[in-house]
Length: 233
Image (cartoon, rainbow, N blue to C red; front, top):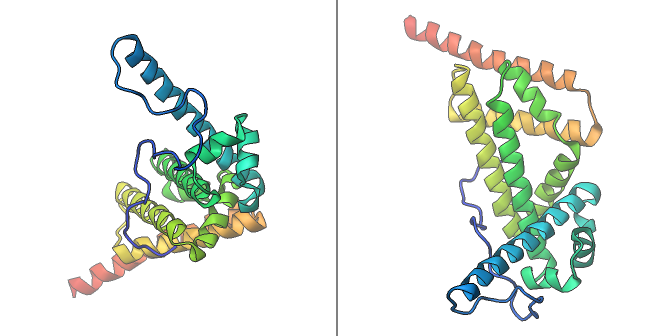
């Protein structure tokens, strides 16, 4: 992964539904209201958000189980247990649906990465745990990551993933008092990405990743020691 600081194209909150589609019953925009009508409007918004979340969760599950080709409006609607019209109401196109699902996958991956790196144990053990986590999610992520090379919208989301991983690694290195520069973070992140792909695609044992990551962390320590000796001369 190559670091290119750039915000995700999708911000927090509920994106506007697709244009030009009929509105599923009970999910249209609220009219100005007070009292009971206002309460009803809030309930409608909650139902709409819950349905949209269910559609995205279904798209993510399909990405993990069957990859990019498995995500269609019809398959997502079936997986979520909602009418087909609901998918085209919230997402104008399959590309838009996939982009939002990729965003959700990246958000979950970054949250899982942060939780593991903030956890107990040595840094090498925590990095090794990253490589071996949730193979289905990793397959979906890396398939979309490669596909992002042909899609500028997905490319921006992929960069968000890379930048988030770099930030989490830098925090972990500081916590464990490993000397590092931005180039060292990129070195470790690139190594980790390669191990991720090998472990995910080839189902390699985690022991190989552990030994490789141990060597990388020892290299960071050794580089600091050499630099210190040179400055002392």
